[in-house]
Amino acid sequence: MSTDVSPVSGKAISKSTTYFKRQAVNSSVVTSAFLDQARTALERQRAVCASPQEHADRVFKDILNQAEGTYFGKKHGLSAVRTLADWKKSVPVRCYPAFEPYIQKLLDGDTNVLTRSDPYAFLKTSGSSGKPKLIPTTRHWRNLYRGRALYAQWGLYFESIGYSRSRGAAVLDLSWERTASVKPASSFPSYSISQRPAAVSSVDWTPPWYEEDWFQGVEDEDYKAGLYRKLRLLASSDVRIIVALNPSKIVGLAEQLAERADDLIADLRRGTLAGLPCGGADPVLADRLEAARRANGAGLRIADLWPNLSLVVSWNSASAALYRPWLEEVTPGVPKLPFSATGTEGIVTIPVDAHSAAGPLALDLGLYEFVPTVGRDDDADLEPDVETVGYRDLEVGQTYNVVMSQANGLYRYDLGDRYTVVDRVGEVPRMAFAGRSGFGSSFTGEKLTEEDVHNAVRLGLGDAWRLRPLFTCIPVWNTPPGYTLAIEWPEELSLTPERFAAQVEDQLQTLNIEYAEKRRTERLTPLRVLAVPHGTFAAVDQRRQAEGASPAQLKHYWIQRNGDLLKYFEDVPQK
Image 1: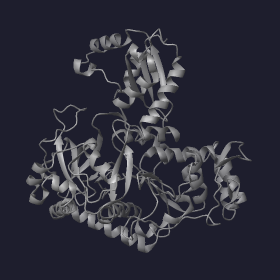
Image 2: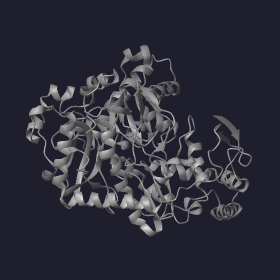
Image 3: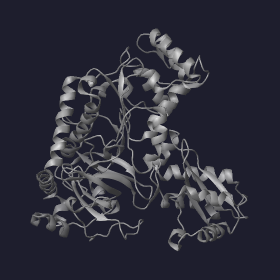
Image 4: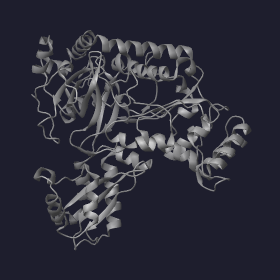
């Protein structure tokens, strides 16, 4: 990857050394065959809501079939399991660390460990301690479950703008990208859920844009340059749907369009991208955008580039809901729908109608059990023998921890996620993601934990950790958001607050790969250190108690959930 300077704006621009496969701007318009496949999947998903139990029974039998005879199955006596009650007695509820010995056996080359269908790759995500979790993914799991679910949700998106208007339209899919290279975990490929090097089969999720240049990941490409590349390659296309996991990415796209308006107009006039030929020139579009830029007074808006944009899709619950005003600002008046509640370990909900933030439980994708959150410590893992309830027992308005069993080998897995029941779709509860248990904050999917903050400060202090200063990390909502570390500054500390902030920032990025990614892509601002005098925490607690806070609310956390606490610390003179 090399860097050039824009001849228009003078800004540094990323330049890929890989020549584009096609000398034409691509859009991969939606075809009739693809629409039919998505529509069929959506109809099937709605049928699940109408008659869920037969699908739940089939999934349970398939999970048993995958586990029976394996190392895990023999160890837990699964050959004798016939009912859900048997299953609960034989398999304890577990968090990821309890699965690590099984994962290690797979990495060491053992077969038939968790599932009869052995994994072909591992999906990678951050663990609560910062050590990446490796989630086995099998062809059986992808073909029978995960791929089909994605067709269903896209069927809803096409239906929402009209199948006739979808046919021939272009889509900007920011929810994942095809990557050419992956990092191995032992002898297996390993990559994040937002990347995939190849489709597993014809029934796997393989959209029309799968082969297009704009959809390909470019190794070591700068995040902003990647967004601009997609804008340029799809500029002349009739984009009608934009889809992302987190709304912050759509906002980032809009910001790049505004900041790089001159570059885009110039590239369209010359038929170039990063100095390389990129299809034919489009002077008509360049003139239209130039007129829009002058009318706006500054930059370009998404509606200027794609006036037929009809739908925006992203997560829209829990911390992602904070982006609603910001998302509306960059795509005013455009209808919004939610992406499925999708995690690395599995899919929990799939949207099937126009609800803005929640979808019905995906009962045909896994076996789900629930534990009411009422009376539970928010930071505690579920007990191995915790009593669970089924989907029929869930109450509207209540929030639950989710225990999930998947045909990929995660059996009775404490997902660590909490969902609130909104209503019902047919016989199935509609659920909205309410946040992570034990997780302090997650503005953009970084899932920053108390362990992350505690360890980053300890490592950042080095030998000075012996001074044990009080500190807490406070989420600060902004555009983009970030974190402030309030710390009672030790007089003996030779570091400046700025240098200390840089050291803690480096440790956070090392400990948490999602945090590092969001910082790299500038969806989070750098950590700020607020150095306060000794005794500040006690004074803050005293003030809050005088204002009516209960002792439980005054419990010390290494990372806070309430950004409003920052004002209490900022009222204290800084060091």
